[in-house]
Length: 214
Image 1 (cartoon, rainbow, N blue to C red):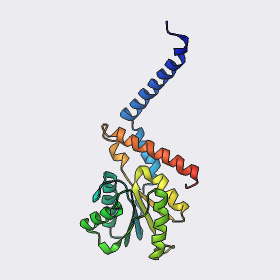
Image 2: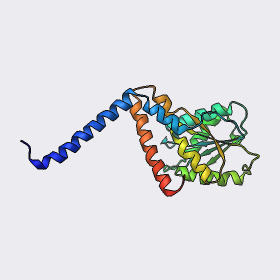
Image 3: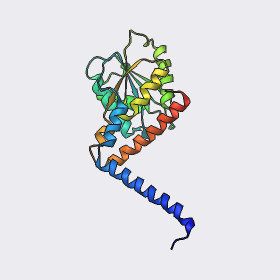
């Protein structure tokens, strides 16, 4: 016979175990991560324009881009190869000495994007700052206004927050997400990593909404 004071903690532990089990089954055996990423990505139209804005992601080392930065750069190159965009803007600073926008620019140049067609913004530490400093950079180079169609490229799960932040900053961008979490969701071993990104992004959305940034 267990002491009566142990009953409430045990009930909560059982509920917690049940919740963890349900979550494990949902993430591992269902397409919930894919559905969530598609909803966060919004319209999937691959719009074209004049200026392609690419948001930086992770940095592995001083001169090595992280996985999500790599894929953002790859899809930026694929968009550029369509032959419509006239300018690419890469936005991303970071805590390291080398801003993430720098190696991403080098990577795009290696792929064949002309160096003089790429502008970089290296001060931003957050998505909110991406929008703020990109707006300043575009104004400096006279790339704002209805004559310049702006297209925003970032990961599928990041697009919901990113395009709303840019709109709040006064930049009318057309979203061009690419399949990041969606691709990983097809590999059951990768789904928990993708789910972790979704959980972090959900927390960031809540924080940005509380701050009035979206």
